[in-house]
Structures are given as C-alpha cells and as structure tokens.
Image 1 (cartoon, rainbow over the protein chains, first blue to last red):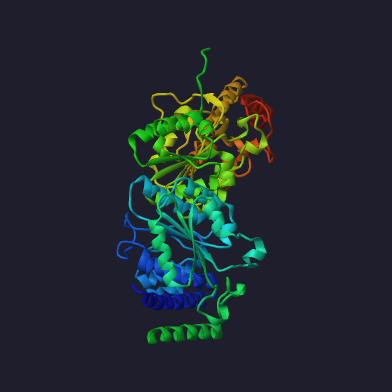
Image 2: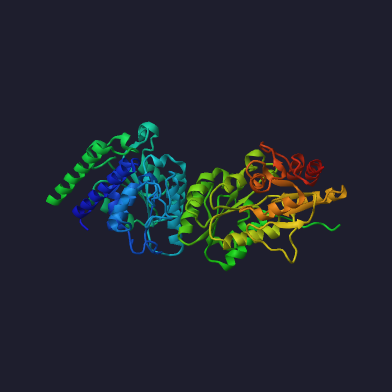
Length: 278
Length: 313
C-alpha cells in the first residue's frame, strides 16, 4: 500500500476516533489522533493479522500499553474489518463491548487488556519471549505514551527485553510531548528517550511519527535489526488532524461538544478531499 | 512419641513444579531473584530453559506471565507473599485478574513465621488482597501433602490462582491413604460438638493440637481444614456452625479480610453464629524466631487453646 493510500485510511481512522469520543461524551482524543498514523501503518502494512482469524496463534501481536487511546485502536480495528464501524458510537456506553480501555475478553483483535499505564509493555515482552521460546516467527508491537514511560515498570520490562535480546519486539513511543498536567519535560522529563532505551540494550530509531515514509523506513529497519529489540521514538503532534486540538494538553482526555465535533469532522472531511486531489 | 515429619510448604511448591514440568511442556516458572528461597531452584535445576529469572522486578514478572499465558503457556510466578500479592497487587488485578488469564501465583514466606526478617517481609494481608479480585482462586495449604496437591490442582484449573506457602517447616498431617484435595472443599479433620474451629495453612496442625488440649478440659472441638479461602466451602461452614453453635477461625494472617472475614460474611448472611476470629489483630509483625513469634502472637496450639476455652465456656 502506498503512502497516499495509508494517509487516506489514517484520515478515516481519525474520523472514527472523533466520532467515538464525541458519542461517548468522554475519552482521549489527543493521544489517539497523534498515533493514528502509527496505528494505520501497523494494521494495514506492518502486521500479519487476519480479521477472519483474530486468534491465529501465528499472528503478530499488538499491545496498546497506553490503553487510554482505545478509540484509535478500535477505529483502526473497525477500519481493518475486525469489528463493525457502526459500533464505534457505542464506545464507553453501558453494556457496550467497547470498554473505555482495551478489553481482550470481548473485543476481537485486542491481544491484551490494558489501561493501567506501564503494564501493557510487560505483557508484550512476555509474548515476545513466548515467541522466541516456541521458535515462532511472529513479531510483537507495543505502543506506549511518552508520559507513560515515567512509570518504572516500563524500564523493568525494557531491561529484561534487552537482556533477553528479544529482536521480535518493537516498542513505539508516541512522543507527542504532552501529558495530562502539561508538557512532559515540565512535569517530569523522560528525555533523552532514545538514550535511555539504548542504555537498556535497545536499537533506537527517531522518526516523525506522522510521516508514513519515515514510519515505513523505521519498521523496515526494526525487522532487519537482530540480537536486540527496537524502540521507535515517534515524534508526533497531539490532536493531529483536528485544528483546535493540535498541541493542546487540554484535549488529552476531553470530548468535543456538538459544535466542536462539527468543526473537527469538517477539518477531516477537507483533509480527505485534499488527499483525493493528490 | 515418634518424631513428627516437618516440611516447609515452599519446598513442596518447588517439588510439585518439577512433577508438573515432567508431564507438561507448557509450564514456565518465573522468579524474581528468589529462586533459592521460593524453592523454584529445584525446578530450575531440572528445567533451566523453562525457569525464567526476571530479576528483582516483580511487577514486570507479572506482566510477562500475562503475556505468556495469552500465548498458551501456563506460567507460575514466584516471590514472597509480600511482593507477589502486595507490591504486585495492581498488576495482578489488572493484568491477570481482569482478563482472567491462566497465571498462577506461587507466594512463599507468608505470615509472621517468616521470622527474623521482620515486619517488612511478613505479609499478613495477602489473603485479603487476593480474595477480593473477581475470579481469583485463593489457596492456603496446611502441609506438604496438601501443598503439592494444591500446586497440581492449580495447574489443572484454567484461570488465575493464588497459592500461599510458608518458610517454616511444618508438621505433615495429611499423609493418609484417603486424603483428597479438591479446590473449594474444606476437610473435617476431627468431629466435635461444642465448637467449630476453621483453620487454614500452618494453623491447621496447631488447631488440631489445641483440640486435644480442649478435649482434656471436656470441650469437644470440631477441626476443619479450610485450604481454599476462595471459593469458600460455605456449605461446610454453615453445616458445622449449625451443629456446634460456636465458630472460631484461625489464620496466620490479619483478622481483617482473610479467613475470619470470609467465614464471618457467610455466617452473618446465612447462619448467624457466635464467632471468634484468631489471627493477627490489626498490627504489623516483628523480628524473632518463627516459633517464638507464633507463641507471642498466640497463634500456636497453646494460644488457640486458651482463646477457644474462654470463648466456648
């Protein structure tokens, strides 16, 4: 799939995110939108997954360690055919299977329940270790937030993954530079992120996480890296694609009102039209 | 009187893992730099490739186990109860309990019988913490025979199980030909009509000794081994309580949240009965030899005898 096609899909994923969060009247649009391009690349280009057989034991695995961006995961899963797109509007509603944070028991395509920050990455490390132990070819991907890596458990997991040389593991840090209380380097700086992962025996790659050319090259490089896991530090724009949400910490965990939803969808419709002109 | 055989249930844990490992390739044992103490070193010796040391990082060990179980492995994570249930509580709840993953938690060094290490390592709250996690099975075996049976049963059961083991060598009391272990089924070890003593873990043998002392005073005590704290054998609790009219619980654990609370919940709702909870009363432990501490905290046969005698009058 070429970059333009991926951009079009990412735009649809963003519409799904905004619609789901608007319908839920709560949720986390900022970090969902920042990572939408990464999700799109993973599910449409990188990972070996099959919506018809979501539990295939040889599939690649994905663990959303920053579980609060569940709207992005659900939207990309819907776009990829794991669940009906019309279900997105039931996000966070009583009785819906689309829980506020990923629930592996009830959502097709979700490989691990997550949401308590720092925990998902450890599970991904366990999956990668199982794959190595069983001499299977599948790869394991995990997305963390840049605020999330303030959690100590992330570094426990990184230490062990590096120690065990899990080169079937890729962690992607969604580096949108914002957490609930503000800019991450003002709250409690995790920088330099790449140097930290390097120190834990990871191969590291810094990219623009909203640029498919760079995303593609990074995942290719990760595949070619042997003897150590890879960390992709993806610089992104929080709220990417919705004009008034971009780079605003206030849109970390807030739903748009009716007027804001209209503007957001207009932004995305225009972006979609522009992509069709390309 | 012949010398009573004593074995620490942590040894039983290590030995049972080896037995299971010989039969089942999917067993993976994880430890957090305590293999020598938790006795998973016994398994490590025979199956080094299936013994994974995670270093001193219990929370990550729990997450790794969660991931492993989604790939068809049956992981047993091993540490001291303080860390396996305490430090790890939220990881167990969210990464294992919520998705109901097939992970077993082997927690050794529970209770004040840890001894000299003192309060920081004497977990008296683990049964309470684990019992309130939906879907978690909580087992506290009383001796070597039961502990080994419990590890096998935990492997066979599909879902999360918390297993509580001790550091102290305790008398073997279940080496009888008809002994059977079934998750959730209490065992009447001694029939009685004046008072029912529900004991768990190493307190079962102490309660049996206390019952002998009570008998000499003309008090007939029924002694019941509750190896499974959850699901609790409610039917047995109600049946015995209805028979004797007085209930005592004995545990090497806080009286808040463990066996005493579990029995109180059942009795209050379904068969109100006078109840005495014997355990550690809302305080931390301290350093000292294990047997001295059990005596000081009145958790030995003599302490139980005195308390039950006063209660049963």
